[in-house]
Image (cartoon, rainbow, N blue to C red; front, side, top):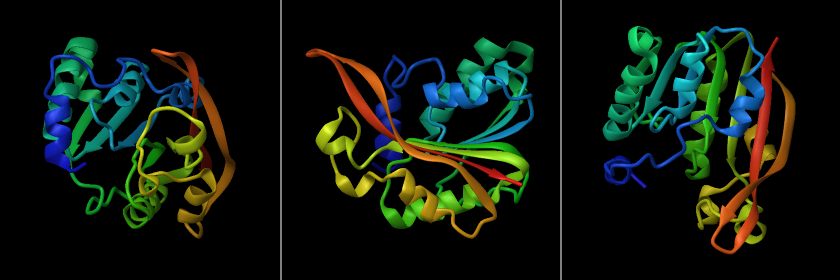
Length: 204
């Protein structure tokens, strides 16, 4: 989906995603000391806002102006005088180049694109990680198409944690975890399991 498509999706009255952070983002960052974060493909800003509420300074990047406007409104409501902790950048990840080794935490959550764009975006994300910092990549796993629920129904937009690890090879990051993870999803047919690709890496 292009930026116009996401603009239309975000233009509704309700949040497209939950107000709270992604569960894997929360798991990784809950006990980290506050610092600087970069949230790529940030959408409506749920991860960026949660981090900012915990004292982080966050740059949230997305190509949907409507999604970022939603994030700006939520920041004003939830952060008040601290809304400036979230810096919003409208940019396409095919072209965006973040500052090199400047972020203590870089998040790429559910960027579901083709291999070429994904590899470019993940390598840029890896290069943005500061010494001692972390890169977290989460996506709908390739296996989710046949054995999970939700997510894109096009295999081209899916990948594995090992794919992500290959994408960032040679960028100086140490892979800490690269694995599929399951999460429960409530559906009309009852609870089902979705399969995510999960990668966590650190720059020494």
